[in-house]
Amino acid sequence: MSDFPRSFYITTPIYYASGDPHVGHAYTTISADILSRYYRQFIGGDKVYFLTGTDEHGVKIAKNAELAGLAPQVYVDQVAESYRQLWQDLNISNNDFIRTTEERHEKFVRFFVEKLKDNGYLYEAEYEGLYCVGCEKFIAEKDLVDGKCPDHQRAPETLTEKNWFFDLNGKHSSRNLLLEVKDLIHSGELKILPEKMEKEVLGLLNQDLPDFSISRNKQNVKWGIPLPWDDNQLIYVWADALTNYLSAVDGSDWWPAQVQLLGKDILKFHAIFWPAMLLANGYALPKVIFSHGYFTVDGQKMSKTIGNVVDPVEMTKQYGSDVTRYLLSTNCPFGDDGDINREQFVEKYNAFFANHLGNYVNRILTLAHKYYDGKVPARDVSLEKDWQNQVDNAWLVYHQAAEHVELEKMIKVPTELIQSANEYITKLELWKVMKENPEQAAPHLYNLLEVLRHSALQLYPIIPEGASKILEALGVGIDGQSAWGGLASGQALNQLGILYPRLENKQ
Image (cartoon, rainbow, N blue to C red; front, side, top):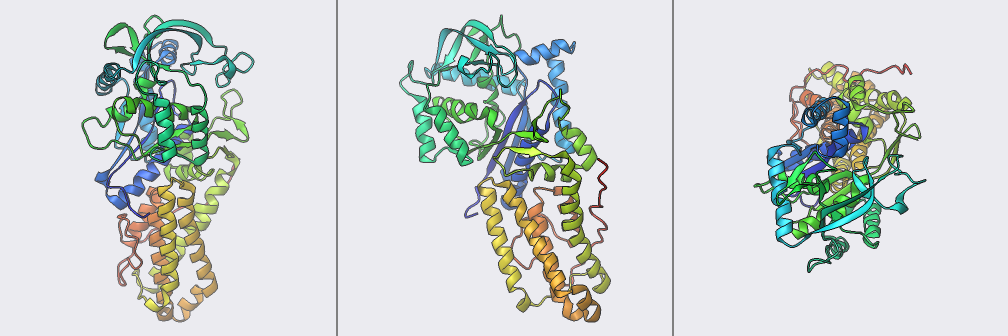
């Protein structure tokens, strides 16, 4: 990376609190955590702010609470706790967990929508349309499949309401915010990644996008934040949900966010509605909006009916946080759709953790304790040039991948370094050289230990628990020291044991 940002604010979407977290939520949050940990290593922990949370208002939540025999607030309290617990189990390092039922958020939302009104971007109008309760949005007839919402497989209701609307098209104000958002994307000031998602957003902007409602009548929606100037209306979905990114850091210098991660199902709202509202109220835009794809499981869409739902809670219990993080974050190139093959979990674990990383760590630390009294052996600078060049290039690729939010490339860098090191051991027949002449073998083992240090630093954002144990065994920290030669000869090494035992596939 050419230049690190002075600070780094990253967000996940706030997850809709209509039920427990699923694997898609885990995937997004793990991805955000990888970037957060990376930037903490290189710019300092106090300069990184990582936000996640839950979206807790709306018709669907009120109905689910009623079905569960609970008051809406009690229901969302339970759901929010299930998210908090999963993030703890997955070793997620978020700085904050925002809930839309918190007073700090509700207070800011009221301020934000009132400012939209004062600035001339809200107007009252009657609207009749097809409304999907599952989506919590009006849906165009052309988007129905066999008369049903394609996402929820149910026919929408016909609703007529007088609501407050946000003026996207400049019909009630002096600005066409849609055109402004489009120009900002074209200029690169607002980056939508990956590139195919930017094309999708620009395609939407070339369509006739209608203004959207920022309120709903209390007769139809009873669970939400009251509109400050109209007692008959509650603030609706996107004016409530999207503003969490500001309400969480209100009064601080964190905004604008460097990266906002989300799934592509909510791309339109984040890449068009959100920037438009920010422009209307005079806020800076986020630097990057990154949208990843969908997951299928064993080639099919996840469904409780066919029993192919991957439960991240159960997955974490079975494999632990590091392995779950690795299996999900390496499942497909970040930004693409991917398929989870559950039968390959154990195979992938053994290939990377047991055979690749675990075997390498065990081999070289065992040799160090056997032949060099558990200390870093002497180095020979004349034997280090090739390794130094390879490691320097690896860091260059690694930083560029992080800058472009290419997480699978970040993970590939240390994997390839360890592969090169394992091949180096085999080519030298190092175990034989060490047995016959430990002094001659010493610089080679130094190089291998130093490669392990760099690999562990690069793996830390992905598998923080295991990487921390490796770095601790080497006697170093996670501070991102990426220059070659960080290990000092004679430095004590700690015992580690079998870090990742092999698993048997019982499926």
